[in-house]
Length: 136
Image 1 (cartoon, rainbow, N blue to C red):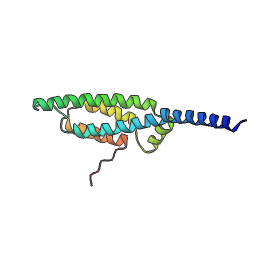
Image 2: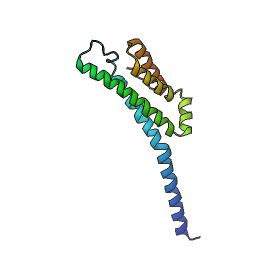
Image 3: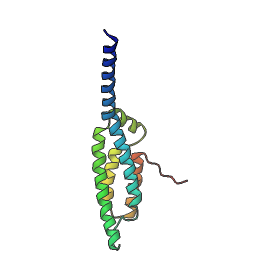
């Protein structure tokens, strides 16, 4: 076979493998990592609005945004888990992460108005996503 033909064939195969790895492995993993960061950001941002009773109108709107953000994050996380490669899900399990449980706790957090229950759910979500937020 001609060397040029072999070079073209190798280039096409390498391009196809690269496209496959990028599309079906890297994009879902990067999406999961971005979503995990967004969830942490929302948990920090909405910490003070667990219960809307007795709050002013601005805080009540923030409370409603918290509920909506938690529900969206739960749905996005569940959808993201469907696209993650099996080997990455196994890696997450080995690291002690359970994103499916975090999605369930996000829905529970959206439904709770008790500060203690909310704090427990937040800690379970962080643990399930492998987020460590110790301040030095």
